[in-house]
Length: 532
Image (cartoon, rainbow, N blue to C red):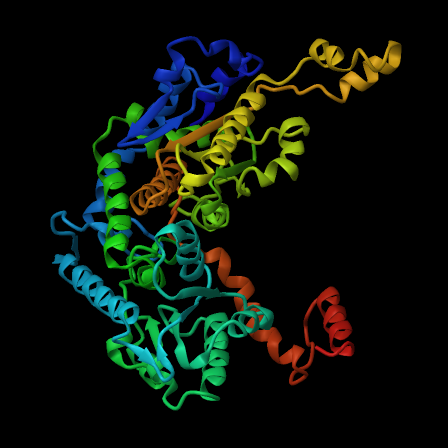
């Protein structure tokens, strides 16, 4: 499938793509949706390469598969489910049918219930035993944590509700650190687990329940649940009016748009949350309507395929020059790696090419003083994705934002241009001479020709955050469709959990080590001797 692209890459791989940046390239190698721009001019993709990449979309019938997704067809074939997180943000669109039934009335009813509850919490109409709610603790893991935690941080300038905290790790240090910050009599605990059986989440939920029971008479009255297991939430003591469910056609890592976003809605309010949804809806409409060359999700996906499957670059760095987006790289690690980290195609055959890349990153400028050394001078090429806002929320610190923007643009330029040996010599010619001059200069050479894309937008608002998340969701969809894999199951997370269930009684001393391998058995013995 990638042979024509690899042949083209072989012809152009040594080309300095800095030389391609004439007056027209920047205008041609970009795509826009509303006020958001994707610039991919600083890559080695040319007109011929882009044409071959777009051919992949046609051969994989990405348009047909896209339409099937929005129409509610069960494109999650291994689980027989529709993939309709887009319905959660379909605020003023038409019906969305699943098995012959329009799901939108239920989506809107749940959204209205969420908003009513959130406003009751924010206004003080709903209170804890000690008075109005001051703190909200969201207990979840994976998509039930990463999405709302990232979004609450990103939209901090709009946060005018109770403080929001997030607990995910079964390590007791996580929940203990949060509980120490809160008053149980004025705290609302949200337990986010679709089945209400997720072991890490329920372990932390029971810890929170015990903590609250020491000070609160009716503990269940200060709990809410994001779950479809009504019998289990009732047994936990949570009134049905504070239980918000979502259908199995919403995957965990795509669920921040619905009930999993309740903590975000409590923090920023219903109007701002709906603006967040409208941002996602706007990107949906762009994805469905724009020609491939002008389509942000499609072109972002094709750039990723070019770098990973064609050029062989195994990782991708996400570098938001927007501190509010400091959790975005972690969020995208799950979104992309859990979705497209697969080894078999739809028909169960082994993939004949690499699947998704390793996704990682940190916000700028912090990363410049950490891992950028490897990005600039390491032996492996790491394609970079920069995100930058034209303005920050701190008007009185605009000069600092200008410095931030300068750093962002300078990094992408430096990755592309590099510094040759002659230029490096000139930098140290006043300090060294002869062989030492040459040696010192070589340490200051930057090979350059390292690709990056930049996503730019005016200001990080709820609408823009919605656009960004939906952009990356659809990027995952396009890459998965081209690769011929199912982006919407996650069997790879199951085996370790199954083995942990069997190991727990061994760790606790209630069962023998049995047939465990020598390494595991020895580690169990060591940890038990030291008090586990």
